[in-house]
Image (cartoon, rainbow, N blue to C red):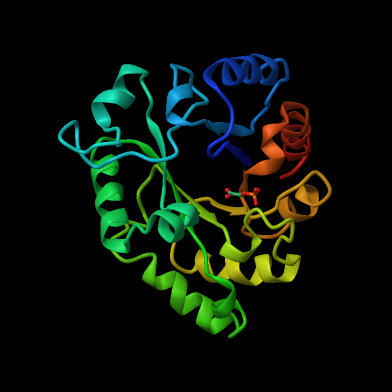
Length: 229
Ligand code: PGA
């Protein structure tokens, strides 16, 4: 089974997201699991939708955050945790990320857990990459049965330069040593490279940012995934 997920980041309004999903559902997904992560203001009840982030509390004095109570209003049971933009731009620590993981695991969420190394680590070679990724496994239950891992090298996100097929292959096979859960690749996945990426061993799907914003492109990606293993 392939997993194809769209991360809208800080793009699209509620109206646009509703139209997007209506259009998306015109195609048959087959056995592909599809997930869409819109901004908070565009959350609504739909089995495809997940939250890009959430605070590890039911509710409380956490200005600017949303928690379990807000997600539950829309019956959201899927969350993205540890995205590199939250780690590196917002400054979330591994300890805090692990807290979120624990909380949403306890509440039985499907967790898309993102990991990935910055460029200076990649330049040091695969061994350094694996050591770095291990620091992102601290406090994370890698056998959680609703866990989906997304390997997204920081230097490949939003740059238009994805990791090479060989880099993806060798990194996913290293991650596989730690978990039997699905491992997605993310970082400049586009229509022109998705097929080759999905064919790599230990790649169970993709997490798509900018290319997913165009619903026609995302539909095409799902169709390609349908034809894969
Ligand atoms: P990108 O983003 O496809 O625009 O590189 C991927 C992601 O951040 O999930």
